[in-house]
Image 1 (tube, rainbow, N blue to C red):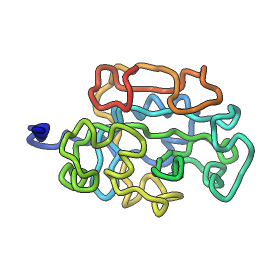
Image 2: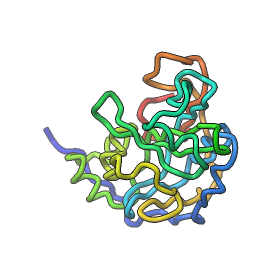
Image 3: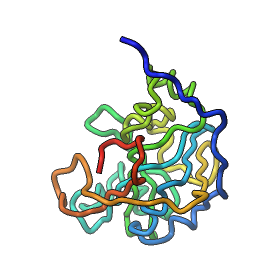
Length: 201
């Protein structure tokens, strides 16, 4: 089978201003759509956020719904930190903690458009097609080398870097994916028309 062509992008797109932890000290429903179009890098590898999901402690799909545990304790702390967990015992998933301490709300990063460090991502994922490198929360963690070692890290210090979007995107909303509780909440946000999604809206 012929391999998909590599990206023809000559250079990575211009980065916006660095996002600070204060960016996350707001409602998770404000932060989640504002992350669409931002750039997420780990050790200089990553891309443009194209899809996210919001989770709030008041609804049963959130890991924090039943209170703090050793795994989710970081969600109950201050905003602007990472929360990494293992999904189905197989894939790492990365979240950004939002809102005031005690709120225990977070944004799950579901997909990226690869823009930085594509060779590293291809090596880690073992494939060429750039559209498949980060088209899901587990895939993007593998591509960026994210593991439990990256949990509870500040989002505005190395190895993590977040940069604001440089233009206002068209955003679409839909139901969250892969959950069995609170399935009717339209808390999934995506970049309209993007080819780099985990699932079409």
